[in-house]
Length: 250
Ligand code: C5P
Image 1 (cartoon, protein in one colour):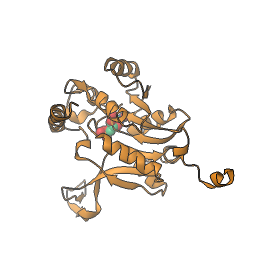
Image 2: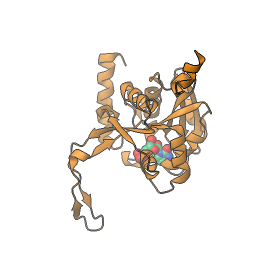
Image 3: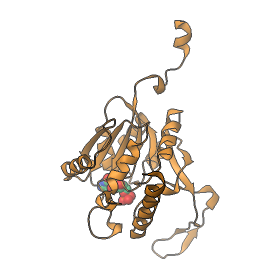
Image 4: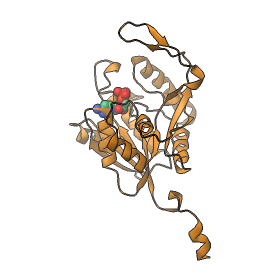
């Protein structure tokens, strides 16, 4: 009955709108020490960036991927991805990035096709995020949350410190803290507005949305979604990958 149907709200599930993942990979990753940019270091013989792209492509919910490459390196990154054979069912493009992570994400957003209504932003430096984590972030956005981050309880006690003197200024209640990871998921319009209006330096996209006063939902993260930042993280990532290859034919 047409009258009944028109009363049902049209959610994006009823349309052909797609979910995209923007992967900022334009940083040099100096904390890993000298050598190739972090995203091009290898894990199990495969560049970290390729692992990150595969992690997004493996999620059925993700149909579009935009990789943000170092400003002068877009052609090289495209060649690298092509050389590693990625799934043809995912629409993958590469664009040049900017000076800051924020600018790189903004340039990635600008390259998204019109038919994308949900956007994930995923650090290239988190190559081993499990597919279940990616799917649960998309699902929470599709269920109505404008912004979603995966997060884990803190193992360490965290202190704020006066950076000039090194003296502790406070100890936030650990049970109220979460260490947040990526992919962070957003309603596209909300993330676009955040990037158009927030200019203060930030380390993740959700904090820009928080500055708009929009609620950000935390869903369970995963310990294997850690960021490869320091040399020890490479050792851990190799071990996780070796275990997956041995047990899941990964
Ligand atoms: O430096 P950090 O580890 O926080 O970087 C997080 C992500 O942002 C990395 O994947 C890095 O490649 C990316 N990034 C970027 N453009 C920059 C700086 C960092 O895409 N100018």
